[in-house]
Length: 377
Image 1: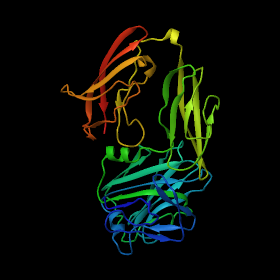
Image 2: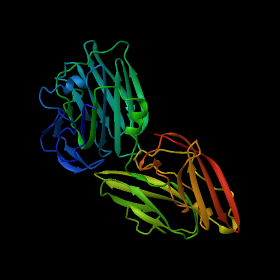
Image 3: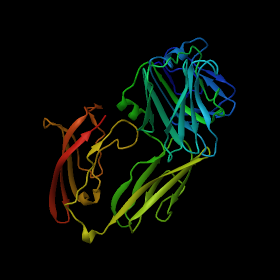
């Protein structure tokens, strides 16, 4: 990685040696995607790299990768996220974003003329974590953990620009300067792989800790809405929710209900849902023990741990074990709500297939279930 601007110290300094940035105007240091970020007011800019630092060369080389996350209100016009060119006639490119349609546009300036391509953002998310990778004439785009498209030049384009890249403005296509929050800027002097790009841009904020659970009637179940910032929360329906304006709540209901939580921060609102399925103990199917087929313990708060989905089947007595393919036990618990975090002796366990075995008491009988799970990194 050539540069990482986390903005957590409220400066534009690079967390790696060299390429410190420069604040232009007075962008506000506010709560961001992770830690702190900078809020742009339409006249603020951030220059990536000091004058003549060579950052422009990095971001217009034959191979590079760039990633950042942005947050803005849906009613804003098309705005410039990044500009990498000395002037409007020079080689380089700019990236713009239209909040209304949630679309990014990549505009290239080459000696043979101007070309452009657009790709969709995540219409259901306020935070847009986008990445672009270049390998000679091929550009790949990613948004919020998904591939968003590609653009292929007929020949390798000359985008070389010694000018310092600028966040938040200097558009040559009529896009306005950025209004909103920019955070987590990463610059690589190489191509990052597809898997790395998908993991890097996967959402870790504004998501619920769970999306489905089976419970007995009026049995409280805890669920948390992960967010880095103090947003305004509203749960709907509110009946059975311990605190309808909180991020972490206990839900208690006597009928199967889909709950929605909405959060509003800096003029943008998004939501997530969880289905609470109420199980009648008189019709309980003790054979229907459910577990996921895979999990991804990568620290994004989404599918990071592995455990039993239908914990109500094993509330009386339970032994839950996980083994590697050589038969060595890597995890065990007698708590039906216990979760494996994907570690082995404090270090990340290797990706691949693992075996699980559950012995549990349901009703007046003992049951067992075995199967496999894939750990994905």
